[in-house]
Image 1 (cartoon, rainbow, N blue to C red):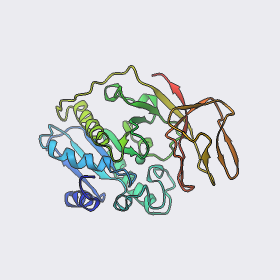
Image 2: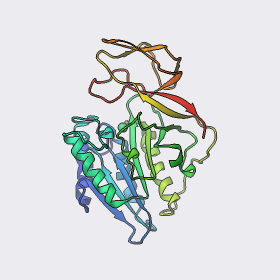
Image 3: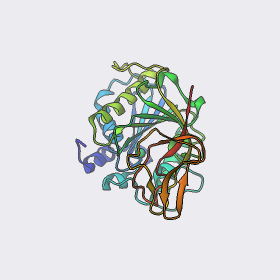
Image 4: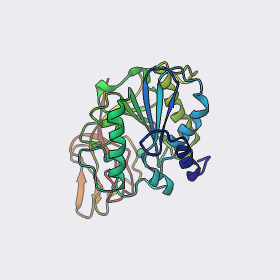
Amino acid sequence: MTKTRIEAINFFAQRQNMELSFSFIFSSGNPGPKIVIIGGVHGNEPVGVEAIIKIQSQIQNLKNGEITFILGNPLAFLEDVRFISSNLNRCFVKDYPKDYEGFRAKEITDFLRKYKPDYLLDLHSVSIGNTQMEIHKNKNNIVRCLINQNFMQIVVSQKAMKGSSIQLKFLENTMGVECGNHNSSTGLSVAIFKIKQLLNYFKMAEFILEKTVSSSNFVAYELIEPIIPRLEFKFTNPDIASEIFVKKGEIYAKSKNGDIAASVDSYILMPCPNPKITDTDAGFLAKKIVF
Ligand SMILES: [Zn+2]
């Protein structure tokens, strides 16, 4: 991070101009689309927050509409941890957990329900490698103009990422982005690129973008199910990586309670080699799709 975490939190606090805490609206002063950009839903992922701070100086001439910026999980962000009690990005459910993240998810959901944004962009980053991925709630939700051909495309099933912000039922247009590694400069430029691309698409700005968009030449997956972290969970492959194929019945992980086999022919995506038992997933099983 170029700024310290306290400075980043202060950045939001100083601009606070709405009811939802650690958030602010930047308005063009003209009517138009309403965009919501969230960073730091996972406290250890600074890329989205840093992109929000960086983009500020470049949107002074916003042509129309308004952008709401939200610091997702301020407390976890301050402590540089993924979450305090629960994975915030699985708390957007009817029965909020009775803890800090459950409260924050409710607060953010209440705001979004009232605000009715035209688009929600949720910016994340990864711990291992420099994976760049766009995550969509379903096939119908995908705006082809917003796809980046260099990214892996993921479509989530209800089951696989239940409770993530992009799956909120009352929001029609959403995208989650894994921008790259927490600490890479590419991660930050990807996050800024995605914000600019979105503002261009809604004709709120006219940024010159270097990368082209295309709907061909990329790999798309649909997540089938999460890999549940169990006691003493370990992938059998010591070199586990994203997109490794496993056959139906193949044992791909072990735990104290026994071997874990693939329920169908699938690809392992976003594996976490040392998952916490309290986390929601240690990766996902996915199938390749075409759209
Ligand atoms: Zn994340």
